[in-house]
Image (cartoon, rainbow, N blue to C red; front, side, top):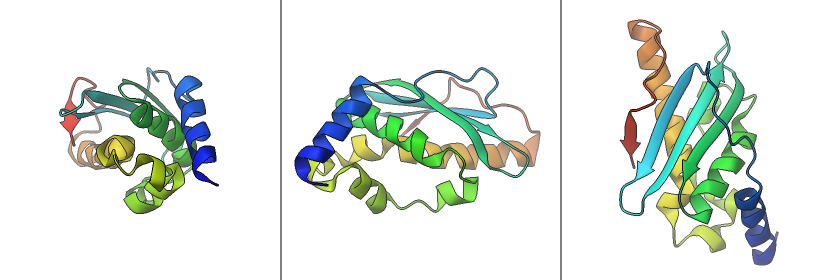
Length: 142
């Protein structure tokens, strides 16, 4: 895609976000934020017994890039395993968003991916301890 196509894709995801909702019975919920600019993304992951993401959504507020990236990420990780999400490369994700468009805002562009990776770690910790659901009021700063 050319620069304009990346811009249009980001604007489309910002203006018409995919999977923007809560999942009340999510397996893990985690809020991530960029304290420097005020972006917030809460990810909801519903995970099956084989550690595959069967449903994913987000809620949040912030700049166009952070919210569009969250929308795009939800589409990308649905159906993936937690290991596949952990293995996702930040550079590849930025390329998918349009490096030339988002490079000046790397923390905004990667907030959702960082939150998804942190949610995977939280899920593993929960499983090791007691299997209880995540505390949605916890905020991880990136």
